[in-house]
Length: 450
Image 1: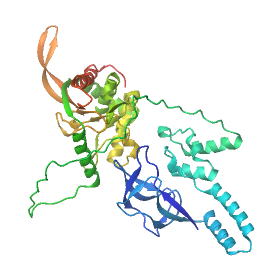
Image 2 (image 1 turned 90 degrees about the vertical axis):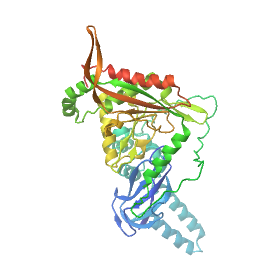
Image 3 (image 1 turned 30 degrees about the vertical axis):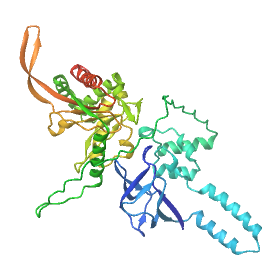
Image 4 (image 1 turned 135 degrees about the horizontal axis):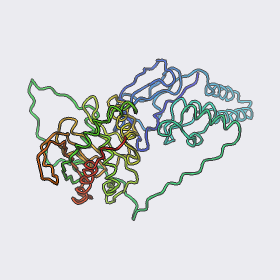
């Protein structure tokens, strides 16, 4: 029997630790390859950790609610066969034979060489995600982590599939593979090195007023995510100087166009067309026009973001909120935006979001109109500097100007509420940005294709 160390996998560039929320297997349970062993939670999402091998769970190194660092061993799984047990046996036998030190040294060298050949690759050092199946194939074929990182993936988000790794192995056997060109990252120049962000310290100005509780009241402890949200909201208000701008938008043309094409859109694309991707498209365009809104703050420094990554506030089944991110939103057409919105929204409801899905946002949009609100004053998602709330679309009487004169008509209107950080965004920029979003929406082409 061999012992396999199950480590906490790398879950994203900015995710360094996770909390164990539940063990799905107990000591002595049989585990199949790719079967979930435990559930973990980062500061954003919950996920499962699968086993890379089949075997018996013989030891749990951490308990429920323990904090684990990426790369740490969290469990030991005993598998059939393996070199580790055989090598340990040989070393023990040689050490016992004190009359043959030279032979022992030679055998130990042989064993060390064998270990280097068969020791499982430590994929926790890679920034890329690889499925357990791909990692197992790489180990069996002797493909190093560095090699695997250079394999061109054909899966979603460039992920390496089973076919990709098998093709790479076949090509490698047939001849040498040309090394890929190094990717040179452009590093932005700053006037001075950026200091690490200092943690926000919540200071109580006065003692909390005790809450009166009687026999008929029910006391419920906040769940883990609600505690996190509570901390984020308080820290954001204490960090940023919140100020708001509001603007009313006539979206009659958008409503008419969507009513006209939504059936054909769903038939052709297999996706529902909601108002959200249309709004997101306008926000992405406005951020390109006003890059001063696509920034973050780190101490006394302003970081201008190269990519436009739109956060999309989504409700979870338990009533909590989460903000998955649409990466490079400005590069998507309306079909791509609709697919991204629906995918993230559906996975949020099903609890299937991954840590990377909530990382890297540069600006956030929240749809308060979903709950019937006309407008709202959302709290900024740190370290961003702005967040836009979409109000409910309503039929309202409005003055319509024509060459023959003005008259009252029924129009579809909504409010946009823009909260921004007055430390770095003044009213001129904050107001101009939301006005540009409104202009894009009101100028929507009713004859456009999707």
